[in-house]
Length: 260
Image (cartoon, rainbow, N blue to C red):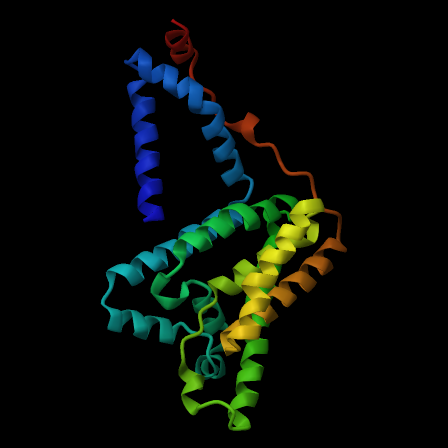
């Protein structure tokens, strides 16, 4: 639904821009809304890794929604970072699992919202290379630590053997790592809001659900936080880039039509 709405809005905007060449009323509307669309465009350009990743996991979700459920179960199991896949092909398992949203794409809207706002804000402050390190740390280290806990649970008989082949895919690990990095830079009321959100969304499920995957989110959050602390030792947060000046402005002809 979110993807469809975004596509419809984008198509409507570009159609309005096209009409503005011939229709004065459309040109006025384009001129009025251009500052907002330019700010949105600049926001996307200033966090390229985040928005490319949004496109990747959104595409995988569209596959899950449109494909037969049995095929989706097979694909996500093969792409999972479970014990069986990590033992057989660890690098491929970690890479493939980062491309899929769990539960057949359920909660895609929340993923997009968190990445497009919080994680994108963090990338603007850390820079693209450092936020990639943070995200990879949350996903890779969080997955490996979760696997160690899973293996221990199997060895001690506290978990059924089928746990070794159950689906565990990792867009959420990257998300919580990026959110932890963002919270590290927050101040004032935003800091309290960020800490509260992580406590409810990450720590809370560990307390009341106590599943392995809830523990995995907590471990990924801690790994992301520690990675953020480490990369900040290479340099302070950067000022958010202002890319609005690099974007094209409405043509002078459309401005004159709008003024008329």
